[in-house]
Image (tube, rainbow, N blue to C red; front, side, top):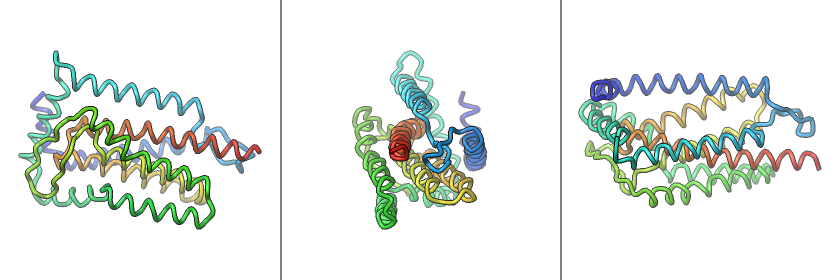
Length: 262
């Protein structure tokens, strides 16, 4: 395992770029599929339903099972393959990533900082209220209000220490699992994309999806490159963030369609 983990660490930035491209392609395919095959409702203006009830339920169950699988793999004493992978990758990244690259990645990572996200969250809420988009404002507020307590609760439950990161470009404290930046980026940019898809003309939709996927990808993966999180921390952050995002968008769509019928 050490050889290919070392190869991943040595090629961290090209792999980061490749994963971003793969994520953008996957996001674009998902957008096109929903555009062509998504259920539409005339009562809601002929707009495709962003997330149907059954799909939301299946996604939520899948995310919960994936999160449980990662948590069990981290606690499994017999094999310890996932902790071993995490620790080997973090160690190899410490010796492989150059200072200039760390400086660049640290700048990207700050896009997911709590202060930045909180300020933009407040501005978006104010804009929605100004536009009298009261349902979207309520759903936006609920989604963002859940980020800190859910992620902090999970961190306190698992109490996993962070990997060593002594490069000086970014210093983080507190527990490591799951990644708060990955969780927050998934919810913030995912919910922002949902809001914009509801409000913007169709010609902007593909760009909205691409932008959200790009930001979610680069912020989460930057935490691995910076060695402030293990690989499994970030994956668990994405998964738990997706679970909460599914709940919020599923609820928002149910409320929207229910209101359209009355």
